[in-house]
Image 1 (tube, rainbow, N blue to C red):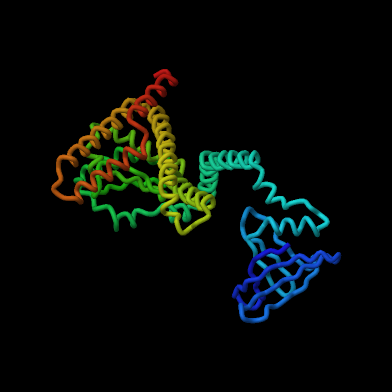
Image 2 (cartoon, rainbow, N blue to C red):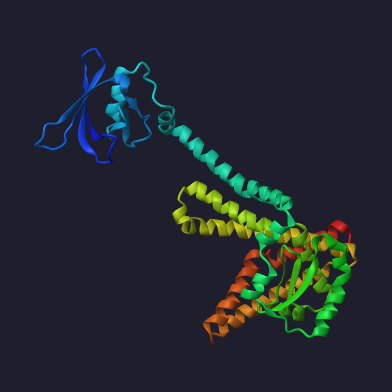
Length: 364
């Protein structure tokens, strides 16, 4: 029996055509014929079987047979190598890895178990791990992880154009409520430069845009959104979202095994999971807002009203963007703001239903 392959001398990376010949002379010996050049005499290496270190089979990948001083014989003829082992080795048992990969039922089970484990990790493991880590991080790490208002001022925001009297009026309105949550270090800030919105940063800043302040119909609607943002601070949602995004990306890199194509392969799944996590955080903040409004005897219907008002505003802006194509930048900014708001938040109908459920549960 002969096995065709390549020979490496252990000194250089050059491959030389060779063949391994099995000699059935009772000594379990093999003979390696190395052909350096068709016109030259070839080299012959006689070896005992016990001198060979044969790599375990893994599918149809090339097989390495090591011997001597880091010398190698590499072949694609796995069947012949298996026959060699069967003839000369005391153990005829194939490698564990080879048995696994040739067992179809076991492969199906492994695929199903892997899929379930990945799903459990993404849906439960990552959120729970991120939540635990977020509440263990020191304050300075949380602030660095989530970004800061200074960075946003340099890249996104403009100074508020609200009248100083109006700003002070809002500050006086929210001051008694912010005082109830001093452990969160809340600070009210006003900015322009983006559409009607409100959000919280890990450092405790609660930013109200001019557009939002001008949109609300009354102070109770403003307080409803204030409590919602306090809920984000209370549950450390920004930090948890940053951690979950990183963990999701790492998980998908681990699955694909190719970091060079991470942007292409992980972009869409990471985005979907991230938006899912975001909506869960919004629901958590919504519940917190309703609980605090009830605590301070503020009718929870104002929460539903301001959510409906925000939705109507974004729908109106969407229609205006479609009708007004004066500049590409104008259209792009409007569409991005609308898309971000609608994609990362629960639907308004769901929020109205949440309010009704809350009222029913509290007997309001």
